[in-house]
Length: 247
Image (cartoon, rainbow, N blue to C red; front, side):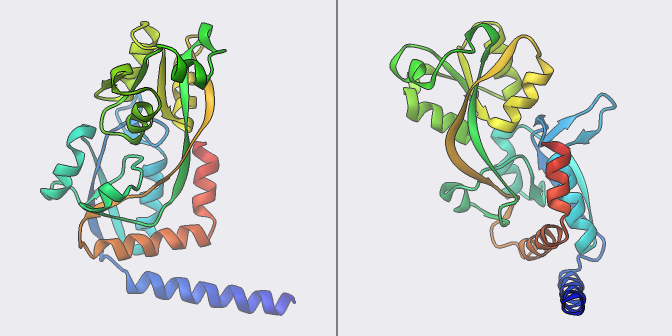
């Protein structure tokens, strides 16, 4: 059995090395567009550095397929047009893979899945999803996101306030302009840490099963190298290690 495991490990290593060689990007620098207001996927730390789960995942992928990443902060509402115009090689911004988006960009295989949650003020932690659906409470969300779509599906457009980013939506919640912010669950947890004592995750498991992927221009052969690198960091356990680090 031990000998079989050794042989199997050698086979997997050989296959991995072969895959890496086939998708070698020759040291290319990938310019990556990201809305860096979405912790823990991407944010700017106190030193002014762009950090987060997406940054680490793409960096690990590039280590496997011989490339480097250069992240650039960009507004979410213009991120896909900028990609189409060639301003970026890749978009990495906690992007949910949807059929509509897949018509204009190509997505990598999924590297993470999320459900949605509702952040509320601490004093409103007892609110339920039915309180929003059946009452007159207002959701906040970031415009152009699947979170905004779910919020509108739940309560209608008239009871959804849209913001340029989730930082603004969370501040609106704290200021009493909205009653809850519909947001990915792991991001909600991050904002709760930032605004401890002011907001809480009042409602969890707003099931959406959103699968996240990196986006490239439609038809860009870069997708093959990114998928190859992603598969390698899945196989060697790196992706799981990064999940443990950030979540």
